[in-house]
Length: 131
Image 1: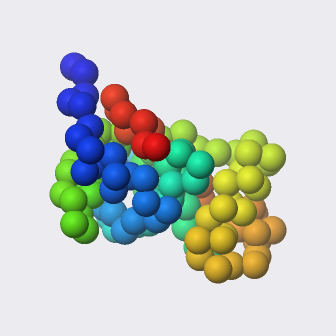
Image 2: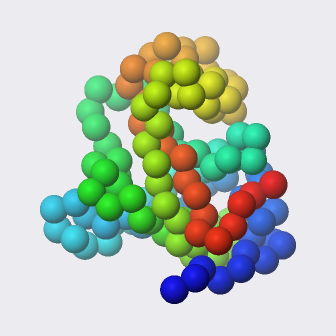
């Protein structure tokens, strides 16, 4: 089934440099929906989710390894539930480029630590592309 078209308010919300959102993933072992609050970054028209550096692998990332489909829930100002697909970014050059942008959003100077310990996915909203 095709995703519904994204309206202008949603497109504008997705175009912000960063937004606090919720995502719902499917539990890798349980198969149950798992919802959490996280920051969505728009860098050069692409959407990314990362996190603070940690040696522990995030459960949401493990869930997306098992099933890359997720729902992005816009919740501040514009409310929308958007089906999406995740792609983990592991290639070093692409990873550094994206994490440098996220580090600027967060006013961080430790990109090397982020390279080693921060999760990073690209999010594609089904049927839409932010500007």
